[in-house]
Image (cartoon, rainbow, N blue to C red; front, side, top):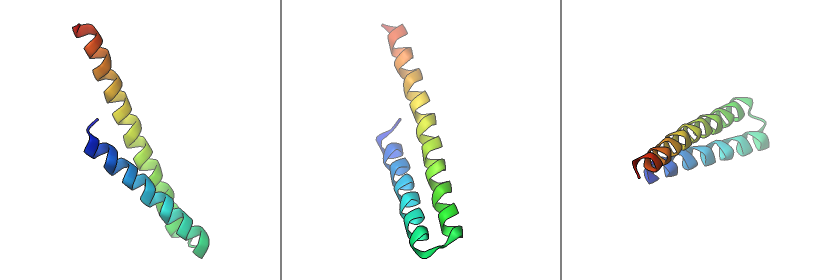
Length: 64
């Protein structure tokens, strides 16, 4: 997983957390749902990147 992808995914997750906190404070259900969706999307991307990293690591073991 590239460093740029990691940074983008963390930024998206942070944006979702901020949206959710603002939504809680303003009682904005739409913004809260958007924040939760942003977080879920970022976490899914991170999980996919972790799988790719693990596959690369496994490939490295077999190449030795």
